[in-house]
Length: 627
Image 1 (tube, helix red, strand yellow):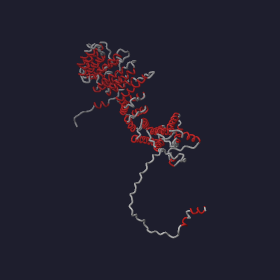
Image 2 (tube, rainbow, N blue to C red):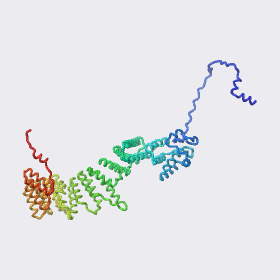
Image 3 (cartoon, rainbow, N blue to C red):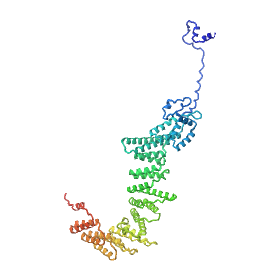
Image 4 (cartoon, rainbow, N blue to C red):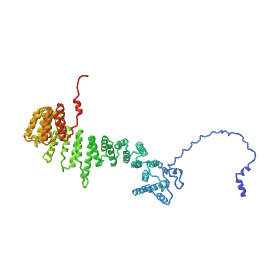
């Protein structure tokens, strides 16, 4: 019976129970319903979708206990599959018990001990492991940056790091500025390796150019799409461009530093100033320093002491008064820092540098630079030493060029108080013909009106409570009268010297002799010379030179040669310019005997006279009105 029942239930047996005749159908179409039909009920609403997969963000979700074999997607990933050795097994087991905060603490310890291989291995195991709830581990951007740092320290190039940064999107992680900074660091290392090559080939130059282009494109992408570059990004990119000597993009990015409120580090700040100075762009360097000083982030940056000297040298050479003043500000900051340190470090600026700054101030008419240079000099000397006379003269020259005659005479008073009675003082220190000639020019700038104003001011000072009576100052006025061809005013000024309580010196007599000589009054000039000799004054080289000029104005070379003989007897040596003047007058007067004497004097004193071919050509031109 059992076999039978099984057989009946068999599907092959069922057709045998049906009749063998064919079935006939009444109609080939279904019958029409004559009853009214109800409207179909509406379709049920679509079900609410499930929440998103909690494992979203990890490309290694399939690598869990349900699928222990790596999938094709995992095999194509940029992260390598860890090895299966015994040590790797321990590392895998260790990585599976850590959460995100735990692995961050672990990586902090590894970074401190520079265990870069362990960071790489643990990260690669950890992203393929599941957490306590059975979900795949999801790294954040900080953890991924640790992995990028380990790859960088293990020798990965910039292309590999950039691929890893782009692979962060597989984990639903957006890279930040620190991620791109690691790529920039790799680019800087590659550039340094190219620069360290002994011989620069065409291939290395092309690689360097391609590296710079990749750097600028990546940085421009950050500016356009984000994340915005941080301080490290600007420092790395600008430093790379400076090392690669690509100045134009470097200047472009430097202009963006204050715009984005970024802070430059000390090395990049020094490098920027250095390359601007080396590229002969002092105005650009001035603008860059001003922008950094205007920003709150970079206003405290100060170049190194040696770089401050370089800034000052470039500023003085290019007559850039603003850059020179900025260098003095940096020097003042360094001096202030030294005074605040314990123990104190007393830094000081060389007096020659301060004198050069005063010269730049006089040429550029910058009173701010003049005051700043004098203040930095006084701060450097610390009242332990007086400035040199040459520094005082530079200050007088600067005030004279600025037209501040009163301050110039005040500086002259300081100079006289410091060095008037000093031993071994140069007799030409207070000469209006040499050292004080800029002050003479300033006194007669507006003719007799400015000379009278200066004279009245000096007369007022001589009658003050603390009288200032200076023969050097009055000599400047006396020579100024001679310069404007005002013989009467010069003579009256000379006669008024004793009324003001001062005694004429040799420079006073020289100024009066010069005034007579300019007006071709040679006899009066000779009388002045005889007078000063009779009162016991010692003529100097300027006295004889002016007397020679007075004779040459009267076209008397023989008398000029007699004066030179007296000059030689007095122990002075004629100058080349003096002998050339006499020779020229002998040529004009056709006095060949005197010309021979001039040649003998030149040979005796080893003076190379040279020739005056161009002057002779001009003198021998035949002017006529025939065309």
